[in-house]
Length: 243
Image 1 (cartoon, one colour):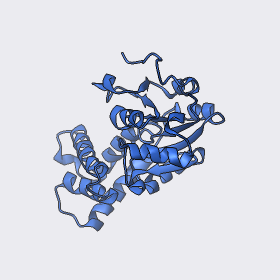
Image 2 (cartoon, one colour; image 1 turned 135 degrees about the vertical axis):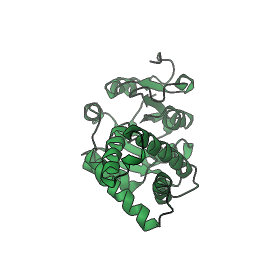
Image 3 (cartoon, helix red, strand yellow; image 1 turned 90 degrees about the vertical axis):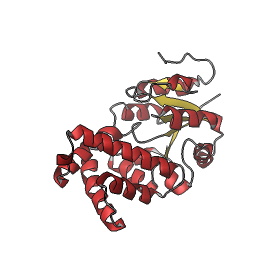
Image 4 (tube, helix red, strand yellow; image 1 turned 60 degrees about the vertical axis):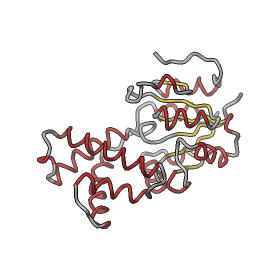
């Protein structure tokens, strides 16, 4: 089968979200005078990430809106019942520090260049269109993609098949002619595979490696491996790089 398009995740696939979030929050907490309440800065950052993951799961499950999960991240972290405007203002101050730490992974532009002529490109993210279009524009990538689809506007999020199929529909291609590249073996890898796409997991450091062998996906450790994979479409039978 021929792969005609690549659909991309953004955070921790194209964009180094983990580093930007950690460095941005570290700077924000220092300015806000909140680090004194923790034994170490690392302890504060771990707590922020745990709260972020829990609130994001509520959004992904359709329990709350994108805006509500943001506000609740702030309220839970601070332990205060803030008004919406107060929570929004606190998060905006954090965003300033976070955006100052934005960067692409070094293998992103070479991979996009290598596939620019041979494949079409789109984005599917579990974030919001406003957030991701701004991010991609700032990082100089927005014009690389025909479409940017996000869960907040779609009303369906990864790993649900409907999210991946929406991307295929926008491209006008059947799922078996589309590859999906993401950093999470379950949300991205299994979700894309079960929707019928060629599923490619970019493992950038083994954060999700435990138990990932059970996920039906192709694993790569750098995007430099992607062009050969999508050009040959090793959907059935190419050796996995697990282990």
